[in-house]
Image (cartoon, rainbow, N blue to C red):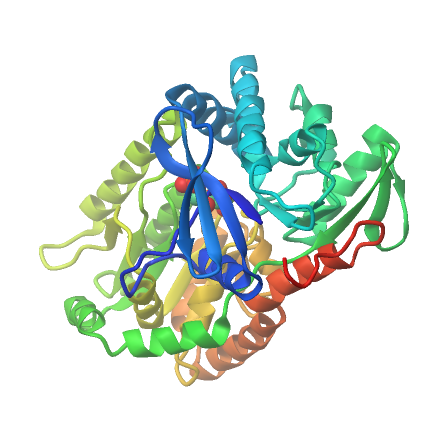
Length: 462
Ligand code: F6P
């Protein structure tokens, strides 16, 4: 059983635009058979049972949230407390007891609904920070099944995590799992250090820890992409009418690209400032570059996100006003989303991919940008050292996104890079992408979860 805040029920129409991760999780479920449970994305009355949608051997089980749930659990504790804190933004972290109560309540609601569907030999795989208390809520209801949890976003150092008033409750809840997985060694180390320092956990061999009388395994499972499949999609999309139109609209200008949800963790204002710095210090590039920043709006009911929408629109408008000409707009700032195929084609068209989050669990845009390139004439990736992807993509130009001058220099270096250097950097990244191929990621996590001692493995007919 997969449990996540949102559920990606595949559309019956061809060409669905689900992201790589949703596609991968669906593949895992289809291979093993199973159920995917979570929020329907709708606000309504809390339900007595989830609504089931069958697609082959996979069942999607979704439930609505009440308006209060949405405010306190999703907008509140998940996205105004945990999200900023876990992204190292103590300055934006808000703590309200009411939100914490809502967060606990929704996890208990999910636990009650899930229990109706769990069979004795099911393995449960929980995803991300919305669901930290879920394993504990399930155990409290008598569930002994094997439970794994994967943290998609960063886990900060204990110094930061201790600022959360109920840090011990949150961390202890994760210890009700059998396996907790992280994107990077740093995240896993931060969590393990917290358990040792705060709970006196004993660190055993191979990251097995003994905490509060239970054995917990911690692991590192960097999320990846299907690099060959993505490369094929990009090559095909590169010949599409849509990409032909975009290419024509550029009139031989060099395109740079950024693709991110509109989120303060993505470093978007700093990125546009760095692009402006390029235009300011290198006038030879004026009129010759187009920066396409695709930024679908996200979590707009949260004030910090609404403020950021305004700030970013103003920044893009200011730069365009300052440097634009009657026949040239430096930044194309777009608040809509594109299909997977369209994005792949745009990545292939762009000579520089600018992926500069202030902090990011992994960042699959960085990996997709690399996989989308033409091996004979690849573009250059400018990547934040604070994205989990930086641990693998060492052929990128790594930058500190807070350093506007440094990022601007890296963009200029990318624009001027020789074909030979672009090719060897791309080859290095392309090979490393194989290490974290998406099928292997899910297989490794579930293999480790299945293989743990002391809990029965799923039977063949599960
Ligand atoms: O990667 C973090 C994450 O919160 C995912 O869990 C989620 O699918 C994605 O960002 C989008 O966020 P939201 O569901 O809040 O729109």
